[in-house]
Image (cartoon, rainbow, N blue to C red; front, side, top):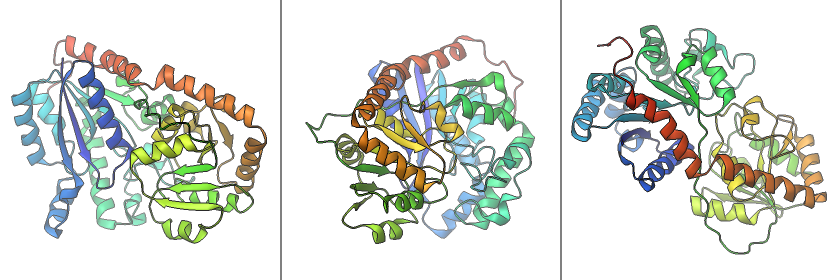
Length: 393
């Protein structure tokens, strides 16, 4: 089988970028002929380039032609798209249909339905774009606090929603959890074309017999989604080491909080992150917003690192409360502090949680499990006669 993977890489390495690299390696190791067609946001530097990128968010004919050439050259059996924003655009789907190649799209976020990829932080408005037009997000500047950027994204969402792009041009969507699938269906995507397949991570290297000590936070330092301020507030009550890895708007706050108990390590390599996971006693994941699949949690599972996380609807697709992780109410610093103190006083119970989390990793999130799931998605599309849907110009 030949697979062409398509991805627009971010300037700052994101979880999606890691997933693409993991799946490329997984397919190659299992004898699949796979290549990557990609763009990178590092190219968006000059002002003129930024303007042309904004104009091409809705539909980029240059990307369509470039992918058409790659399809003719490589002749894949299936195209697997991870991210097309902002440089590639949904125009690449027309290249796939012209070539008669089935397309699979992993939905790592809600960007095809809302300019705010993880939906709006305010709970009263959070899911509004799933049921209504998303123009309301423009004055709120939900994309990087940019009016122009949000407008370009809103135009992309509304144009393709009305053009029927997602219902007519994508052969199969991959949702990362059952919860994500339900939300995507609420947003208008065809339920019969959405399958659930979680992400996976390679088994981490063993860094030696490291002593398990201290709490660990890994992630973007922002309050809307990651709950960093809640974590720092909780730690005022805890006399125990905490190491924080990451970067973002709240980095100055974290630096100010660093001291005898809190150590700020900044942005680190994946190798360093994995080593810290094997040295920590537990991972803190006090998220406040929506995420479709937290790779940090799965990396913790693979490292036998127990997780203390927020009790959110989407997290239950990954963490089973009191079985593979410990949960606390969202945004409640006092409850988080109480759970940490309980964990420190019940080390044997914490070790049992870690063991069950590792067992869940072995069963569901290894490269082997991921390969089998990918083949189960690809093979029916490759075997069936093309085109099941009306041709779209």
